[in-house]
Image 1 (cartoon, helix red, strand yellow):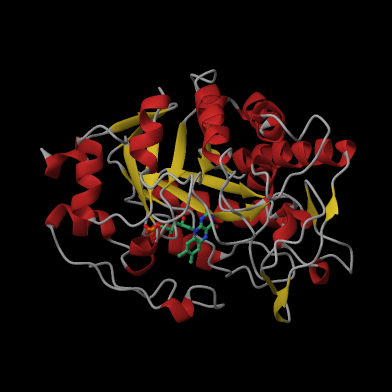
Image 2 (cartoon, protein in one colour):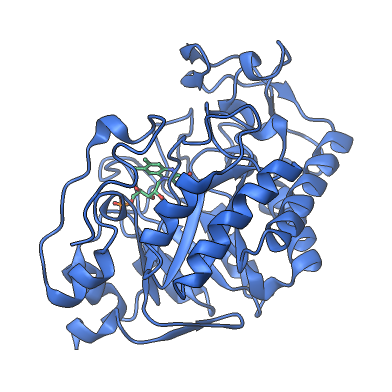
Length: 363
Ligand SMILES: Cc1cc2nc3c(=O)[nH]c(=O)nc-3n(C[C@H](O)[C@H](O)[C@H](O)COP(=O)(O)O)c2cc1C
């Protein structure tokens, strides 16, 4: 039974996927051109991995303000849309399905990206981490606390990004609401001390997320929208868990049931060990799967066996693999045949050019 679980077809939204092996979103920083547009190199990289049940792309910034790393591709300009079209065409020609992850990093950005202007966040709290700027790693700064009008403008940026994504040929989008970036910064007390409609209660701290979801789903259809959450994120990008963090995410996940058409909810297991962190949940899939009635995608640290098991045991409908897909473009075939996995070279995760990107052998 375990062997079969990953290869049972899965329907999400209007799409019939041949397997439940998803490619997790991974920033690879190859858009090293003035437009930050994807190129033929991106098309080759993603098409090599088109056997995945669903590819979720690297985070793509919804606006110039949303950028936080060098050479990440955007989805707000004509050249970027044209660049992404190369990618979607190449993946479709191989019979694959692909969602674009849409992203705003908030306070993880740096003034160097914005002609000296401050990055933005729910509140003026420095995450005390590092930002990967055009001139190397720099300390993060105290961000500008967004006004309500500015929040509304960012909701519109997400909506436009989703419309652009569909125009570029994507099957859908994943809203990046995880990993300490802007939407996540609204969820947690450590980064959100607002006293208006966007801070305080669970409803208020998730208001921005649901406004983005409503705008994006309203524009392209909820069947084409997935979301990503990382409830036990702790100890990076200034994110810390308190007694109210997990209840906030429970509130969010429960409310996702009001969106029966949503393509999927993608919940990440703790990226750093949280066994000794008070109030953290160590097994996200076990804790949150029972709360959500739709398609549940899990990720982080899975091998073939544990991925088979989590689906067979009913704790997820699909498993997203990250680093495994970097070094194993033929990961689906490797899992099918029970072959071992190549190990990725961490030194080329974010370096420009084909090395460590498109030169890993298929099998
Ligand atoms: C090089 C690299 C880049 C990543 N970029 C993103 C990203 O853009 N968006 C995101 O949500 N997660 C990102 N992640 C996290 C992965 O999606 C995934 O959660 C993580 O690699 C754990 O899964 P794994 O154990 O299968 O690798 C990144 C991870 C890596 C290794």
